Image (cartoon, rainbow, N blue to C red; front, side, top):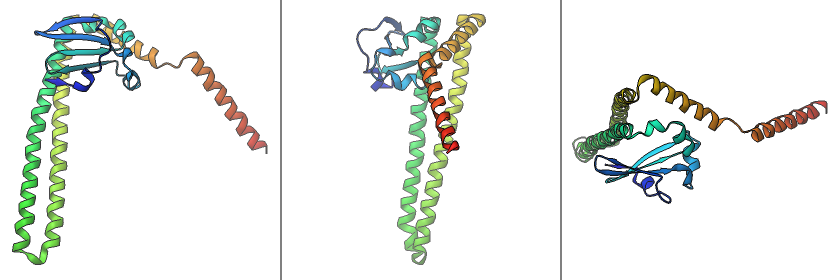
Length: 216
């Protein structure tokens, strides 16, 4: 199962760790080494699982990895990759199913536009409008149902995977890791001293400008 294959191809240098996942190779790279690191970090995404359909690569922020290293034990990796493969597989099946539904809607709409105006020539414009509206509503409804089903599936499988990880690591150790994870997030996004000083100076300058304008 391919997982973000374009991201898989963006590995730089040599992996810092290589493991096995059910006969496939799992390579780990530091996300920091990629030129597009910022697009992930600014969203608080410090790890990215990828696959070319054969092997796997994990891109992970170095500081984050060191903070929560036990989250990347082989046993935990297996649980998480099983979860990821399951979600991508079901999403692919679901997409094909709903694509067929939407294709069916197009066929029905096309047939209606072909034959109904022949039967009711005076109502051609109304028929066209009604058919297009119904087709649009049908497509939107099917898309919403698909998203709802996928969201429910992800939540269910994520809960299952989280339970297995807790069992693997132990409840207390799992909580400790979550605390370290939260601490890393806070420290990463906390403004540096220079940024705070700059912000204070800008605030003071703005206040002085506003005061001057008011005095005038």
